[in-house]
Amino acid sequence: MRIAASLLVFCAGLLAYDDSDDRKARIRGIRDYAKQGSGAISKIQPYLEDRDEEVRWEAVTAIVEIGTQHSLDALIAATRDNHSEIQIRATDGLVNFYMPGYIRTGWTSSLRRGANAFKGRFTDTNADVIDPFITVRPEVIEAVGKLALNGVSMESRANAARAAGILRGRAALEDLHQALRSKNSLILYESLIAIQKIRDVASGPRIQFLLRDLDDRVQIAAIETTGILLNRAAIPDLREGFERARTIKIKRAALTAIAMLTDAGSRETFASGLADRDDGLRAAAAEGYARLRDPADLPVLEKAFGEERKMQPRLSMAFALVMLGRHELSELSPLRYLLNALNSRLYRDYAQPLLVELTRDSAVRRAVYPALSGATQDERIQLCRILARTGDAETLTVLEPLQSDTDSEVALEATKAVRNLKARLH
Image (cartoon, rainbow, N blue to C red; front, side, top):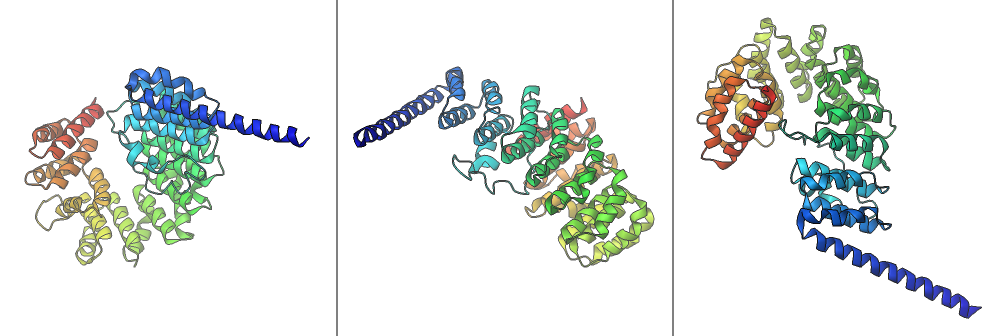
């Protein structure tokens, strides 16, 4: 009896060894194929059906690294794998094709095989989005949309929702709306941010129920998205959120959203916010005044701009003054103050959206054009990005000469800006 038991243990160990040895051989084969480039994808793809998840992981990793258009069908197939990490890797590979470098420097840079590989990987910093001139295959958007709704784990679903936003996946909106019915805060947050990026105003009413969510991060994302999508029907809910805010962050988000909605009924709230000790509330209040566009508010805002010492609210006050007609480009003017902030790594991300909104006005755009002459590298690069989003045919005549700029980084950004602007105009 003891001999028989010992023999069984020995045979089991031998089988395990053989299986491990065979796995290593298959993985070596995949790596050898990967060195051959896109022509070897058809040889690697069958390994996506392997019984061993380690082999499937190696196969999808190899296909991602090859990274040509011929990789897309295989990666779409890999999003249907029954293992979370492989779904995530495949999704990030799809994004990487349209946003080169994402797999190395984006949210997937820390991705490794093994338990808890993705814990803590998702953060509030989520600004990636492809350029407007890039067209994504419909099958890719369909795949990430389905995964956001039906992935095998909360992480793979949240990651797919993030991908849908980065790829501006309008066709995935219905899947994202359904994903908002999840009870998982990570999925809710990533789906809301994706809807923000896609910018479909019809989505506004469909996220309104989340304005009272008990998770602070989800509630703030819902509030921000409501403002961005200009859902005026949510103003009563936003006012209630402002009055009953659990934290100062929620209060700031609510006032910022109200400020986006051009609500004259909130004038008293803006007045109290402009006098508040909190920097964020002063900034939001100034932006609220700006969008009301009432010339009678100009003296109040000029006084506030002159007395303000904190950068963020002062930028918002400068925005308000330009919105109300202060278009001059003198050394101490509000418009110059906003342009100078483009040189600051700390504040350029705050100034840029304000300038995007301002330069939708042709009069402001024309006031900005002369600033490109003698502008710093950072100013030229950022203004290329801004004007690509807001310019018209006249703007092309301003941007096109920058494609031959002596600074290669400026020239590259100008070339992208011209392509994006032409795509938007046509």
